[in-house]
Length: 114
Image (tube, rainbow, N blue to C red; front, side, top):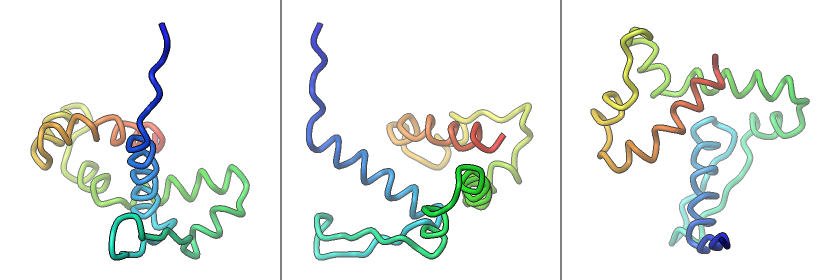
């Protein structure tokens, strides 16, 4: 069975999502252009430091930045690990379809931290 090639739009969305995560981690800033096609992504001072660091330092920077994300802090501060349900939490703040798409991302952030 042949694998289907991903559509160009899927690749663009994939890159856009990574850029948005990098922005949440304060590694880049994204400018507002007249259209999405005209937006630019620039490294922040932290992003430049991250880019030139060794793997151990990169891991420490990522953990620190992930830990400081609003959603991560909200989950840590409001929920008991034993009774936490990621689906219930995400469904309370996002539409069902968005919650389904974001669940693996949030899980990854916590797995990376711990």
